Image 1: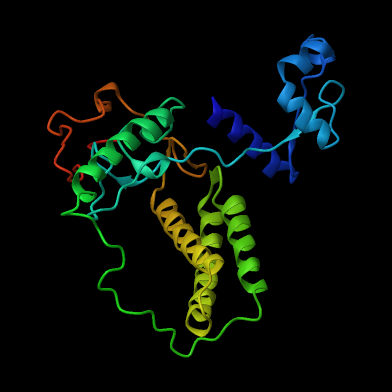
Image 2: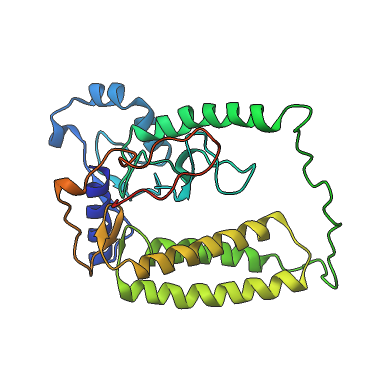
Length: 272
């Protein structure tokens, strides 16, 4: 339901070039009294009033929100990735609990169940006196070369905002090949500028975060271009929708892939 509503919002906003749509829950539309609205939606009422919107008398401007993601890092039943000592938990992990779309209830299992298993596995395998990891041990000192401190941090802030807008407008809820090509060309320019900045100036946390999100953005764009279909949350509206037969469906693990407790990542799941 969330995907359908968000897609409808996005479609109307793009068709009409408007920044938002309206949600009307006033008594005249819903038949709910002002008192009941204030009581039932107390938190939303207070928040909207703070922004100058009275939900009992006027429509609420709304937009789709960046909400859940379908993680892509393969993990096993202990949250272990292919990198020894690196765990992935929550919505960044591909656990097998969701397919091309996300079920609301899977978030709880991924955040709590897998977190507990990952913590227990880490304690057993890396936190004993004999196996305790020493972070950074043996690593050479960082060499900054000829890099100097930047006096122009506006470049970092500008690219942060540019990547956000680029991904929201061109690689958001509904995608087309034309938009994705535009995004690909622009992210390549941004990544080139980031590379130049990296070698000329000393590193800061905001810059490293920018470097990472730009890389992730480029990966998402390339994958979306390569996947010429509509499936789950990947909505290429210029491509056909994938229709699944019942024989294509399977449980979390296919018959020849069983949960493993050895700390090794699972093989790729089949079909979906």
